[in-house]
Image (cartoon, rainbow, N blue to C red; front, side, top):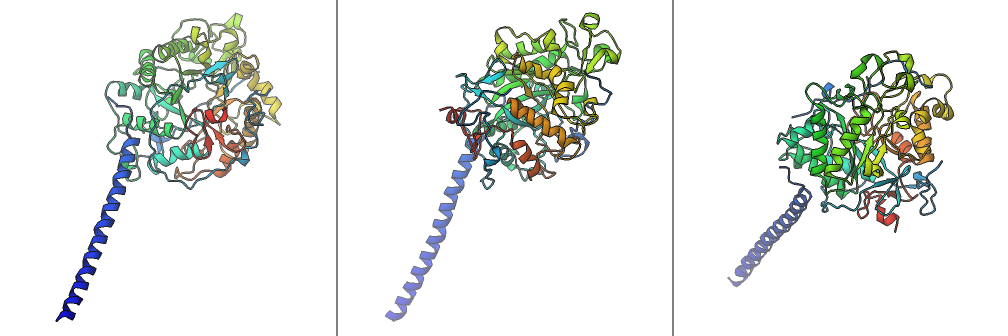
Amino acid sequence: MNKKLVIIIIIQAFVVTFLLGIFLGIAIQKKRDNKADSNNNQSENVTDAGRDVDKSDNNDNSDTDKNDSSYSSDSNSDTDKKDSSDGSSDSNDVYVERDVDYGAMNVPEPTTDDWLFTDGSKIVDKDGNEVWLTGINWFGYNTGTNTFDGLWNSDLNQSIQEIANHGFNVIRVPMSAQLINQWSHGEYPEANFNHAIDDYLVDMDSLQIFDYVIGQCRANGLKLIIDIHSAETNASGHTVNLWYTDSVSVEDYYSALSWMADRYSNDDTIIAYDLKNEPHGKPYEADNAAKWDNSKDANNWKYVAEQAAAKVFEKNPNVLVLVEGIEIYPMDIKANGDFSSTDDNDYYFNWWGGNLRGVKDNPVDLGKYQNKLVYSPHDYGPTVYAQPWFEGDYDFDSLMDDCWYDNWFYIKEDNIAPLLIGEWGGFMTEPNITWMTYMRQLIKENHLNHTFWCFNANSGDTGGMVLDDFQTWDDEKYEFVKEVLWNDGEKFIGLDHEIPLGINGISLGEYYK
């Protein structure tokens, strides 16, 4: 009888121990889940904001129409740090580690110590140290996606982290004035993303998602440039000549800039505003074409840019403003300084946004904020449009003589202001690769700031840094561009004084310590 009792007691003890083990495991897992939820909640604690995607026409910002006519046209930076005279050393020595945890990162509080300034042709930090903006474009807030394109197949957190891990220190974010004004009025057009992949975004409206983006960029040491890419929300909105339309007035355009500058005035994650993407227009379009002179005409981009900059500085005097060029410029200022001629033969042509010849005759005047001005031309290769300067056996010197110098490079050479090439890029095939190699040489030898076009796979005439799945990086293209990403030979260099750039970078404070 006692022997049976002992057996029963042993069995009961085993069952109790087994059950206790199960309950203890559940408790530990619950604690881990709560901790993860807490971390996610912290990362989503962003500024209070007060469908499945169609991957076809509505999300294709191909820019194929940006240059559809015949065109006619007639030294190194001293950033020397850590034994690297050009700040880049040998960028192929920089190791890119991709095996990371792509969860949401804890978001640091916004700071105001990373604002940038200009000094002649350089961009500098608050201590006068030269910085090099080497970034990438990622569109979608202008197309109707109302967030970044590609989230129909990719994880937002992963994409942001990979951009930082690959060494891009700034993202130029194309947006529409219409979307920004909708946000300012309490309207939140639906953001299009994959609700299974990006499930942490499901309960956010499109503005809250944008604030989430800002927080995750900050956590990764990334900075942002807001680009008013179009007046209206439309994948083809960039093809419109001017900064206003029948439904988006010039005052609406100003309001969008003002509202953004005010909302993020205490957050140096957004370091600059590109006032308008690619103003353009041809001689026959007369008053509907962008011009550059000393008038106050509605289509005078130089005057409007000054007014737009004033709206920004009224709300945030700390950011940089980027002013792009136009398309045409008179050959004879005395005879045609008002752009009254409709004859193509009376003008120099260049890429949309790429003609800054007017700076020589009528430079942008920002008054006391002149040290916040950056000129930002765009330049492309023959796969976008077969410009005259690509005819025959062109080379670096012929491109400089036939296009670059007179259109915008003189601005750097004459120490007028810094340059930031807002868009350059394309397919890694001929005839484009020859031009891209020369452009990379120009950027590298002169430390030109730049934002590569683009991250998106769905840019029809250039392709993207990622392939169609928006997850797989184009290694050939990345290795090509990596040579002009700011690094010290071992680590990429960010623009935040405290937060390192991704897992392969260092902070600006660390670099200049």
